Amino acid sequence: MRSTPRFLQGAHPFTGAGLEKPVPLEGLPVYTVPDGARAQAVYFRGGNSTAELVSAVLVRDGVPMRWFPIGALGAVHVSLRIVEDIEAPSTVEVRVAAPEGVSGTLVVDLGLVEV
Image 1 (tube, helix red, strand yellow):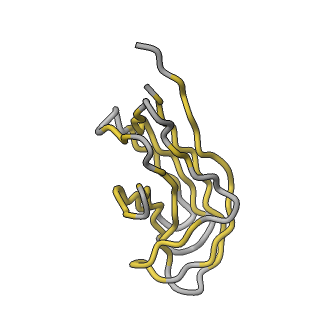
Image 2 (cartoon, helix red, strand yellow; image 1 turned 60 degrees about the vertical axis):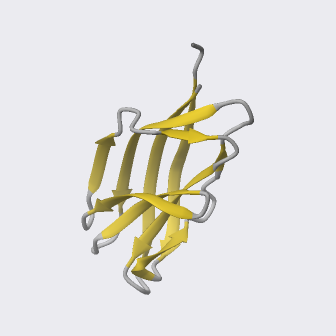
């Protein structure tokens, strides 16, 4: 079976709207699973520049599917080991949930494999 790695990466500024309200990250692309394929998340790495707890939220088709809490001025690495298939034509993006008004930068490295 042939597979292709895909990545959502970068350092993205944000302003929080509340821990229960994930907001899109400025400039982070959205990945769409192409017709005839499926994708699987392999890992997530993230860093938080703020002095507050934030969560990176993996969102599929507008619905949160995984939350990755990242401590103040901290980082996280989560090996997902191909937990589930994401079928075409689903979209995947990373959003951030942070206390209202908190501004900072979230460093994102989400690795996916497309099969």
